Length: 182
Image (cartoon, rainbow, N blue to C red; front, side, top):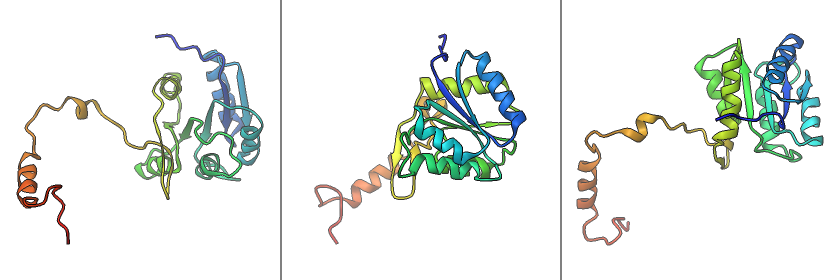
């Protein structure tokens, strides 16, 4: 299925001018015409407040305000106009701890540098074609962090919980809803 990205307004936030040029070139190649750029996350947040941005692409590590703080500002800032905007984070570091920190900050997708056109296109089409529901609780606001795998949906093995269900039923005898009144 062909995806028309031409109407998107994309904001790139990176304190590295060379990386801004690479990302702008990629996005133009995808047909995106409205590309906003900022080297300063605080200025980028002003852009988010003043224009209806459809997707944000931000770097993880920046000097002035790092990408995680920028994501948190977009997701939970009192004056954030669209806390549910898809955010793709870029990083030259792909350690599990960094990916987890980005996920926990509210990033929609994570992409490792060096970025390929194929990877970036896949991330952009993913946030458009398969948006994840948002979760709000005391400590987190952002896209659902759980990722379903095809294995989770096609498992045909034995039900390992069958024994646990029978045991739970025995323990709940005499109580209509299976909950002990203590």
